[in-house]
Length: 120
Image (cartoon, rainbow, N blue to C red; front, top):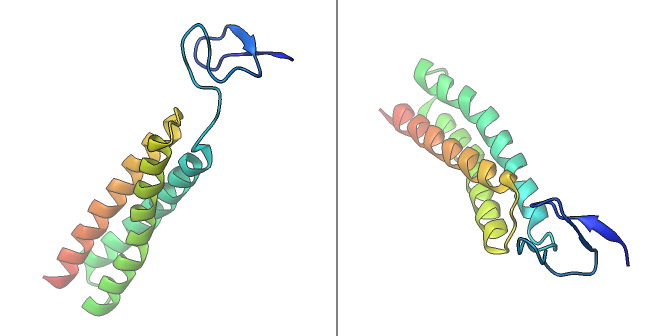
């Protein structure tokens, strides 16, 4: 049995404990992979959604191409939100899940605006 530091309160606890006896923080990192995936997908979606929005404003592409491109990149935002919510429901306490949900939502909103602009 080894002693580790709690990631929440910093006090020494057993590595076999399921939660910190001092602050109650769960030690299992459930949903951590989903939180990281949410953040990565949110970043990718936001990086690619801005050029799509600019192309929609400048009317560089036909409506069908702009709509298809926006829908393709919107998948990143939707998956980012789904993974972030899944991580939250699994009890993950990482801030990455919140960032992923926010970035995914921004991605969805920006691409929705792009679709509206390209249709008009």
